[in-house]
Length: 138
Image 1 (cartoon, one colour):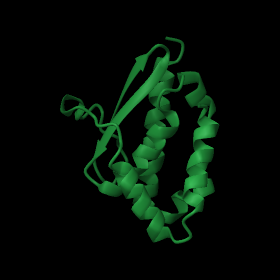
Image 2 (spheres, rainbow, N blue to C red):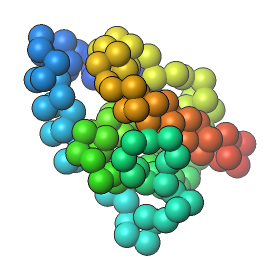
Image 3 (cartoon, rainbow, N blue to C red):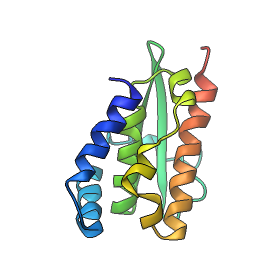
Image 4 (cartoon, helix red, strand yellow):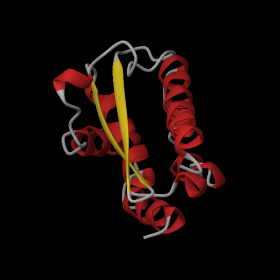
């Protein structure tokens, strides 16, 4: 699936919820399914700066596609990173760099987060893009 197709799926899933508390609960549920980062990868190097909670993100390239794993000590943050991983996992670095996560605005996520969590979201996106830049053309 393309990044846009995955984003459209997420938008459709969130459209069934009218209350933001229900959306938060759904995000928390999604966090339970995030690809787990290995304990050995919970390093300072993989720690995302700018997040209120501790968030680790690792990345590997296989057959020209990037694969991410993550963890967080905050359940809502784990759900947020799971959405980003869902969109960008298994995608080519150039495609990641060419596609901003438009679903965030479409589901109203950023404006329904506290300022510190919204900053953390921006930091997560930035780290994914940094990985994509590092692996682009490899």
